[in-house]
Image (cartoon, rainbow, N blue to C red):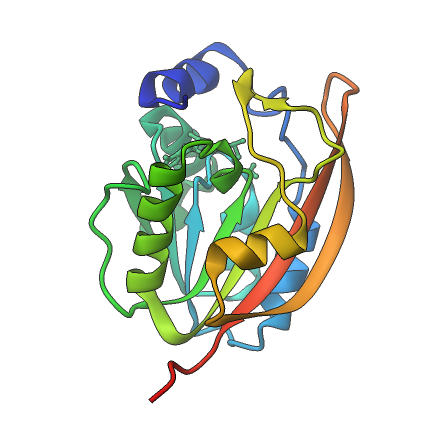
Length: 208
Ligand SMILES: C[S@@+](CC[C@H](N)C(=O)[O-])C[C@H]1O[C@@H](n2cnc3c(N)ncnc32)[C@H](O)[C@@H]1O
């Protein structure tokens, strides 16, 4: 069971570069975001962006409408301080993706690396998918990375649900087309191997 206090502890007790999911750059995410073809004017939301450098790199590429959402205020503070003056170009939301208010029909790209997989409860997954479905634009894209079946059963000491691209497709439903998938072997700063699946989906027009 994931909670705000768990994540506040993580980011106040360990350095952002020592957490298990740390990568200097989220290269595969960046490639998949670019491959959506949505352009630099796309509205991008990074769900559970934490202290990741994805937002720095997106700003560097010229994306101008970026939102970073995270349950942990400590994580957002770390990222904002790192960005300095650039932080004012980003919209920051501190909240639980399952319950937060998000604008309807708004985001062109929904990015999530290692957040959805913490939702081990079916009711929580439904709440997450409801937020995604409502706030994503009609032809929006989803770039999502989760632990693969061969990864350890826990991440950050919490149980996770592990996915294949086919299982993620089932979670998103038939209104999403799987356009790209890529496995990635991540090695934590402590040397633990964790296999991830990255998937890129496109929302299909709803049937008339
Ligand atoms: C494993 S970390 C991944 C961080 C980042 N996406 C990355 O790849 O470096 C999970 C992140 O999701 C955040 N998080 C976990 N559950 C969340 C929720 N229900 N709503 C919003 N953020 C959440 C945590 O605070 C943490 O920053």
